[in-house]
Length: 124
Image (cartoon, rainbow, N blue to C red; front, side, top):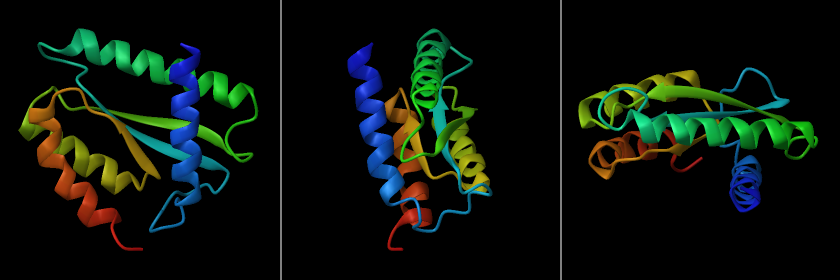
């Protein structure tokens, strides 16, 4: 678990350094993290475990002072491990203006979202 938290913290720190690139986060003291995970459907068992681990990591990171003095907040969206639902979930995350995205369980669902995220975040 400590390795997961350290990996998540390192990823967040790196993302925080680039958070100014097109970020529309309403609160500068919060790093908003979009989470794609299958919360319903056949793969929900795994998605719920993923989200619980993200919540635990965020709770521990925030309790330790956050990242660069900023607290973390999760915005969780169900991708149902389905390509159509994942594209809709990605659109929700993009419209929310999160600083970065974690998650994704099934490559068949996530691959179609990659272009969406790239188009919205590339080339500050």
